[in-house]
Length: 404
Ligand code: NAP
Ligand code: MG
Image (cartoon, rainbow, N blue to C red):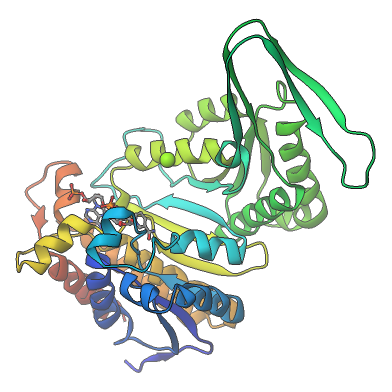
């Protein structure tokens, strides 16, 4: 079977610890033997970020802007303990936050469902993708512990010198708390665009739930912006594809999600997305069975695993012990990047390869061959065989070769 040649490059971002080890194996066993691709490589290991004063992260993000598609390994976000462990110049920012800042993206997470690990919610037959708006709300708030009686006010001072606008929040008779949050139209527009773009890409309906009956200005603005974006740029395309945009109150959305068969994209405000994506991940089993993509409103795509660098497994690996770490999410990230590259380049044979790669990984688990994390979650069966980290990847390769 001759290798497939990709028309355009993919930006590759290497990372840390156990995921760095698996990254290499996935690339050598499941990608490079089958496709010829220009990988624009950036080493985002903590050592190299420190050496380059984190310039490498900025360069990688700019390369994604240039080429459109990137694939990223998990990376350490340093805390004080890591600063000491790696003797760092400083506590560098989270690379994901840096990249998200430069690409202005929304993160979408989708569980990878296998029949051997049934979701806890029995009605879910197809994955639910959560799109979490990663800007504003309580994550960029100002809050105050009110010490005693007094008046809390919302004050806006226009930049053009016009008179300030004031609203009374509460006349306190005693101690309490107060919080100020904000959002920006351009950020909400980018969020809406990214949701409709990915929903269309995945051929699924888009849901939005907010509390606009109570929050008639703040939450209502999210609804307005989604509706405007949908009417202006998406309605015709969605209708042609048999897809819809569904708005409902957030509490109704939650109730419907629990009874739905799945198979839609759920656009969530920042806090809702934070909470609901953890619910979704735990209801579907494991972080290692969750794919993640950053979609920028300008049409750049970055694929990654939802989990971290699996530090504990790495220390065991480094000590020469055997590990059974799950590479499904990393394989899904490579498959996602290759598929998107194929779509953007108009090369269906590359899309086909990405589909086969994903299918080979799923079939491996369905055949009963899996890593320890899944063995713990799977419906017991005599077919289940626990394998080590590399053996799992080699088993996927055997299936992939048989499909080619
Ligand atoms: P983690 O790497 O996600 O691992 C936490 C635990 O989840 C592991 O100890 C393991 O449980 C299980 N797990 C996660 N991925 C697994 C996989 N592929 N296969 C099998 N089990 C898996 O989180 P962490 O240990 O809290 O964080 C480690 C480092 O990752 C931190 O330095 C953090 O900054 C970084 N991080 C990076 C990203 C990113 O780049 N996207 C995201 C989150 C965290 P058991 O030990 O029970 O087997
Ligand atoms: Mg959370």
